[in-house]
Image (cartoon, rainbow, N blue to C red; front, side, top):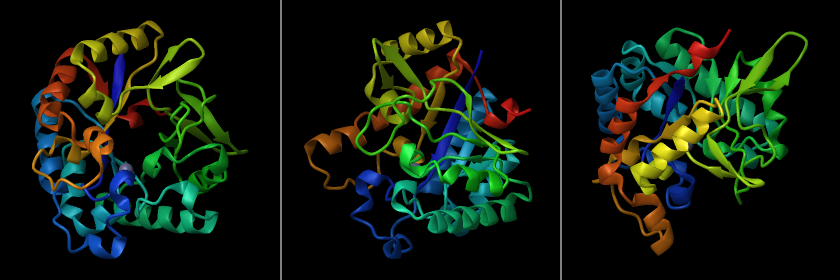
Length: 274
Ligand SMILES: [Zn+2]
């Protein structure tokens, strides 16, 4: 079974946990570390001959088009992570459409191909933001990978399917959803498959969870951010728990990814379309 390996290409100052410290007007003046960190990812993927999906933030693509060119030139899939990294839950439909189209214009202007996939910042396709789905279809997107079928304070659709499904369709098109990986224990789904879980869980547990998914014939969908491989990034004052959540085990993360790449087969989403 082939699993899906995905990267959300944004910098160390973009995640929701640190966003309040860095208004967009400051981004330009901060140290940009995403190129170097993404380069590490490209190298390791080349080593294992694995293709992945890269959900690139439009703002990053605009500042660093050569990064998007490099991802595309290596044969990976370039998809959209929106333009400004605002959660869909915090935008009006008009603002969302503007943010999405700006990201698509930037990306397709660089790779000269249509962009087929979307991942909302902070998994913000929820029950409340279903209005975003026809907008995705209208702009040519074929799939979304933003739904976390879990209970969470900021995001999640607790009762969403745990495997690929059609999240929206009209008379002409359908939008496929690739929900982020979860494990079902009793009545609840527990999140799994993100860079944070890879960092925090011992490898033995990660292996066990992948095997559980395989038994259910559900491919793993893993998402990792470039900053999760960067132990030299600026450390922000986040409080004890958030600091642990955000920075723990970053120095061992690449090694863990390599083990996953050795033990499993991965591909990109576009292979699954049609
Ligand atoms: Zn993001």
